[in-house]
Length: 225
Image 1 (tube, helix red, strand yellow):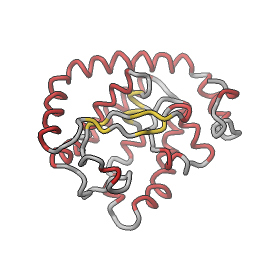
Image 2 (cartoon, rainbow, N blue to C red):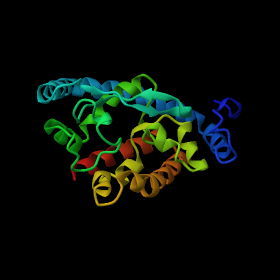
Image 3 (cartoon, one colour):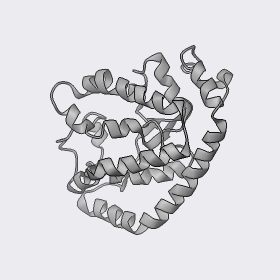
Image 4 (tube, one colour):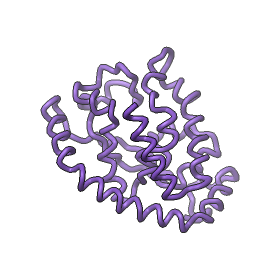
């Protein structure tokens, strides 16, 4: 997408240099998309029996759908519905904050196991195949947190959001930070979100398939720690 076609909130002096930078990485972005499709198909094929068992456990554990389809902000600021294995009670978003703290009573029994191993993210491979996400990239936020971005941070919406990212690894204990005391939303917007965005911009500086593979392995290591 060219500067002239960017949504108004992204067609700014702070974002334009990032449009030019990513334009110079066009070949890498094409290779990244090819890798995303191929790797997602292979991972889904290998893990499908386990994912079916996981879906059954979710249904047996509590009433509600297998997937939680929350609206997130994607590439170029467009909304999309993310696939996540449901880890909370049905209609949890109507019973509390969009953020989840470590001891959130809305989390189900199976949900605690799923969240501990980040298994809820596997279903986002469907978003990757649909072209809405990438295996690695800035994590997608809900609209009200995007609206809290500083002007330059809107540049993180120039690429597809990812299932994992360097910022996800850095804040793998985010639930604990949010439940440490104080207003969770204030902590997230004022302390966590700016640092996440800074790390996401660092990722945009040098995108490559090799780097994405490294981030994926780092994610697995961080989850298993």
